[in-house]
Image 1 (cartoon, rainbow, N blue to C red):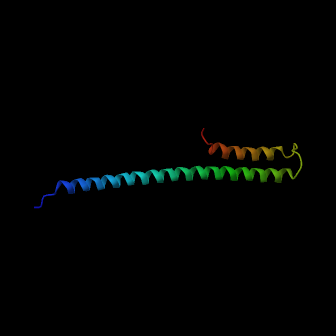
Image 2 (tube, rainbow, N blue to C red):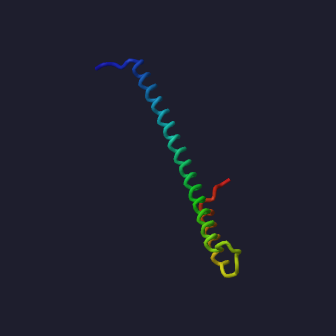
Length: 92
């Protein structure tokens, strides 16, 4: 049976430590990227909801001022926007 030299064992351990450090670094990059992607998705959803709210409001008002006849539709559009904003509220 061949004996392992102390140098081999030390080199092997150093190599494993290096790979562990790289693995931890890659894990950190993946987690950071995932968090940034999630934040970007939230921003996109909120922006899309705001654009839809503006379009809906313009379609309801058609260039006129709000009246008692269209106030319920405007409130419905407002509530829809609030529900999306509340769901994707960005914490301070």
